[in-house]
Image 1 (cartoon, rainbow, N blue to C red):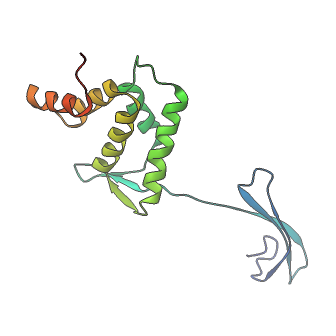
Image 2 (image 1 turned 90 degrees about the horizontal axis):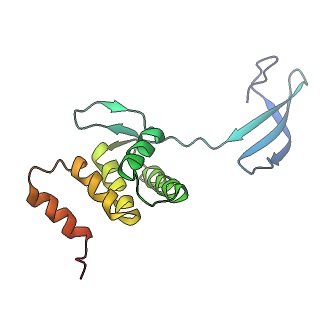
Image 3 (image 1 turned 90 degrees about the vertical axis):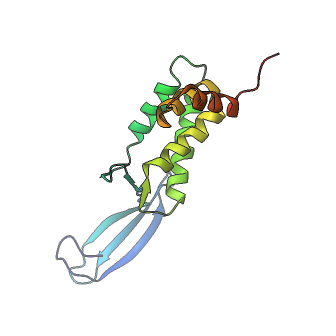
Length: 152
């Protein structure tokens, strides 16, 4: 760690503590060259993979876009905000755990469909009808048969 005062490369750690929130480490350091003291913080930096779209363009992962897609499919459906937050966290965790630097937008779409199928069958069908771009009624009926159980 470089000293912020004299730019010397050699510093000594005097004290290490975990923050109250538990999400960072605070280190008290001393420069061996100028003898000045300073504090550094270490935090985990998680980077989401880049999303590769169907046309080949790449864009940063945006949680707000994911939330917007879920909210649109779940519009006027009896699903709690907590359940939506859990679904978003699950999708983000799967993306992080994939270990890939880039993922296809189709993979993200499949993850969204898995979560919607679990949350609400109607929202799943809404999303699938746009995502899979159904060409005819037969494809729509197949999607309904996949999630539905006929009522008696």
